Image 1 (tube, one colour):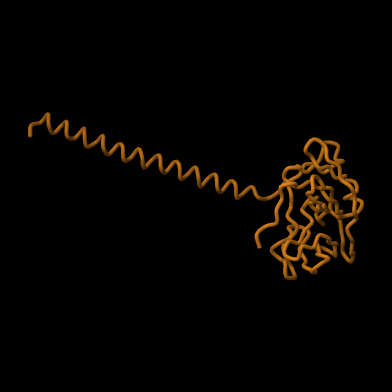
Image 2: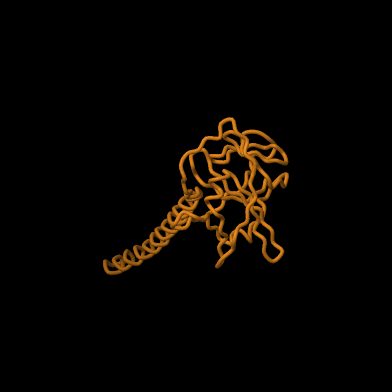
Length: 189
């Protein structure tokens, strides 16, 4: 084998290795992108909550107040003032045979929580506040108001499912996406 043949063989082998390195580098980039996307998605599971100022429910038991909502342009509107006045409300989204129970309440830290008003294992839809906890009227399961962490009962892993919402610029209405609410289904137990 002469010097020119060896040079050509070396160039050919080197090109083959470049292809392998290129594929490996692309694969690493795709994996890194996927992991980053997954971690960002997992990190964004916390809802952005509107805060109206801290409140105290120590020594109090507060039952839900039932109120009407309105639906306009694909949005469900709940009067924030009524939630603040009553601490916890119950309302229903009703349309085309679909009924979804909804609640909104103020946590001790002042955050407004909007949620599906259902304790899914027992199917209870009514709750009350007792001190620092949300209590299912049907089964008695209790969750912390701040964070909805189970503290007692049989349905601990299924607090009312919190919903994304906005508050209008005037601070008058909680705005829920109608499609999100209408398409809600209970979590798998």
